[in-house]
Image 1 (cartoon, each protein chain N blue to C red):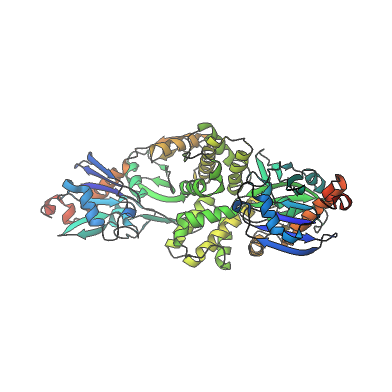
Image 2 (tube, one colour; image 1 turned 45 degrees about the vertical axis):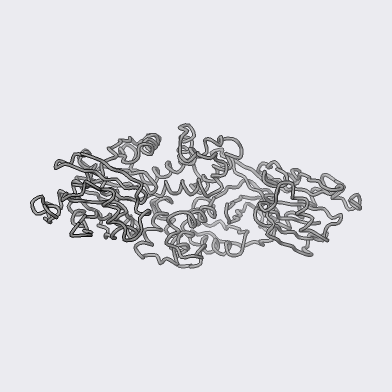
Amino acid sequence: MIAVDWGTSSFRAYRLDGMGRVLDLRAAPAGILTIAAGGFPAALETQLGDWLDDAPIVMSGMIGSRQGWREVPYVECPADVAAIARGLAPVEWGAGQRAWIVPGLSCRDVAGVPDVMRGEETQILGALEALPAGEAVICLPGTHSKWARVREGRILSFATAMTGEAFAVLRRHSILGRLMPEGSDGATDAGWFHAGLRRAGEPGGLLHHLFGVRSRGLFGEVPEAGLASYLSGMLIGREIADMAPPAGCPVHLIGAKDLVALYALALPESGREPIALDADCVARGLFRLAAHLSREAPHPTLSPQAGRGL
Amino acid sequence: MIAVDWGTSSFRAYRLDGMGRVLDLRAAPAGILTIAAGGFPAALETQLGDWLDDAPIVMSGMIGSRQGWREVPYVECPADVAAIARGLAPVEWGAGQRAWIVPGLSCRDVAGVPDVMRGEETQILGALEALPAGEAVICLPGTHSKWARVREGRILSFATAMTGEAFAVLRRHSILGRLMPEGSDGATDAGWFHAGLRRAGEPGGLLHHLFGVRSRGLFGEVPEAGLASYLSGMLIGREIADMAPPAGCPVHLIGAKDLVALYALALPESGREPIALDADCVARGLFRLAAHLSREAPHPTLSPQAGRGL
């Protein structure tokens, strides 16, 4: 099969064998925002090129959003691989060409406010088999960090924290960025990152702590080169305090290497053990969905026999 | 005397009689960011025009910052009018022309992190005489909201919350703004503003609540025209929860009419009584500083006798 992770800013495709092993990988900066309406079939054919044959194609990520190829309705939590596979939606083009788009997940928090993810559910599905029995917590740090509770193959619930985007807009567009040197766009100073983490645990609240990034910079108490790390630690520390399970419960991390490294630094500060999972679990999740779909709802493009010649 | 409130984006000057009554007022969009280095004397002369005679000139606001005419060191809290007057710094130009710049205030929060204000201390000084005896809380909402504790003519301490700027950068530069119609740049819908205030009191934390602005918008639970009001309420509600005194203690508000109106809506939601003070207290504060200076440290430009002819 061909597993496609098609997000806002990037495109990744994996060719998998019948056991789900990755035979080949292609990546391109061909995120959905770079593609005009109606341009998705051509873009997919360009990216997949000579991979295109009768192998089933399953795609996850923002390709299933309103800005993507087709808006696929969210599946509600709790959900397991079967429930998510039932939500797979086909897109067709050319002479009977077909691919499947993975639905996102939705849930409601204790106050009844909805939350959504699109793409991360597939990463979580790909990681679930590696988790111990019983309930576990998975964190996917990023622009919109996702924190999921899982148990026995089910995603029970999740919550989003806008940490990465808050950092980016404060860094680039607020007064806090003015004291930061060009190029300091993330946490690169472990000492000031830890100072930010500790700050998040002090009284006053985030909106007050943010202004302290400026005042401590003005007073020379945090060097300009350390301010971005201090801000990053403050936001990630706040996120962990608000989202993480009770101290003592480990947090499984999935994501880009540098972000996972930051969260792995941050979690022990508040007594949580970080456990890094395979960042490439998205291919495994897509494989599980494809396998499940072919079992539960046989379809020409997903059944090796009937699929020939399509 | 001439009282000047010279901020980042605006210039306001008041001509006051010997009792501190406002005789005349001039305002211009001639904030310090519009003026090139070295251009402050000419700008002041242009703005004051025929007001310029031997009357003393006292100026507060960002004119005393590193980006202003002269950087005036902060005075530490607790501070009363005398302590702040002792920090007045002269600037001179032309043939012995002179004006005074009010210092900002600094203090440290319980964790020892510094905080600063520049301009608001003068507004507070102007409002103090109108307050009841005993300790009181003053809130100056804005880009960087200031919350001050005052008692018997002294500013005991204060704290800043970056609420207004957080709203602005999230509105203009984050994904939250994408669903908001053009022109919805503030809280104009009281119902959704209140919904945001209530949201601030629910579990999950601000970084999670922020994402709910998007998800509730996507789900059509908050109409697009209500999203900016919902976001505003969420941020102001968080600020009040973090900064305000125990329920039951009134909060005195100083600021622009529309912002004061928003906070006056928000405070009762958490059991605080809002009391709006005169927004033009800056002229009164400058008058008190000028009077104090002329008593404590006589100077040609501030003593009617010696000042003639300067």
